[in-house]
Image 1 (cartoon, rainbow, N blue to C red):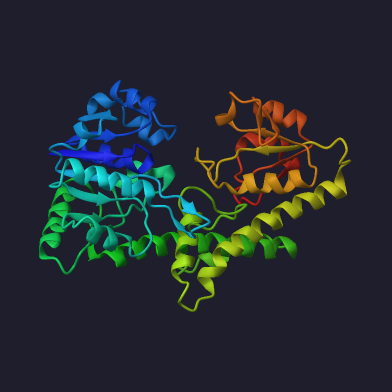
Image 2: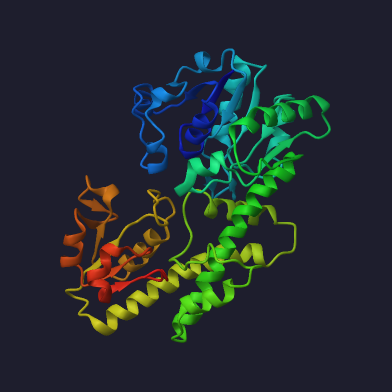
Length: 399
């Protein structure tokens, strides 16, 4: 089969690699550098897991920006384009998605279209009506950035959203399930539901994860305020199997591609539904960042001469093993600290070619960070900081 994947980001790359075992995969991408690297068999994402599965010559993969060439004679079109949150509209921005759909149906009205991009609840119903599509499916991803391929090959579940009132659409949903079953391992738990339900599963799943992060961050704030051991409290709480010993390490707040925008989208979807918890998730996360910033400012005021003080920032990634700085909580904390006149230097390997970032000096080595910084903040602990542990502020319990 010929399978077109629109968008060669994390989700798109993982999907392409999955389906390339036994099928011809073409990435439709606007980034010419990505296209060149993919076609040269040398497209190594910063994510090590994807890098380890390459080079490309092991797969039936190529990339192009030629729309007509990509879509013609394709059996499946998998759309994995960004749907960023539009704060003015208070919804996910699906304009790029609609543009892709228009091109896809223009050049190939026979392909089954799989939307992987996160969308507002009700979006796929509108798309189905607008384009008169009976081959449209919504199949959201539930992958962790640090385990992209593992989660793609070993999904906890495969949710297939379709038009339950259309027998033909149900047939295409079943065909997609048959296509993916031989490629995945584990539970092979394939769940069929209508479009709206599948869209809700995605948004509620990520909002729950964001809520869990916020819960343990507030637990940590309480423990820090009252001079208690956060780790011991968490271990005691999470020993209950109903809660579980996972996803419970305090941080400076959640960030990244998905959790911020998905929680905001779900909150907007609750506009006509009474709620407290859903609306509080993002509020809690913003409060966390402000609380952390205030803690740091208090330390600076009590222990240092602010006129000559230099604060070091260890890493800008939103979580451990992440190269993703989008909506990273520590970036917002830097903004708060800068507004209070704090002098900041940053150590972040992804910024090695830059001298400045957010009006802060970028240092090229961790040794330079340790030498120049009077105090260091780290969203996630690293053994590299052990020799300067006494001047590091982190809420990571794995110190």
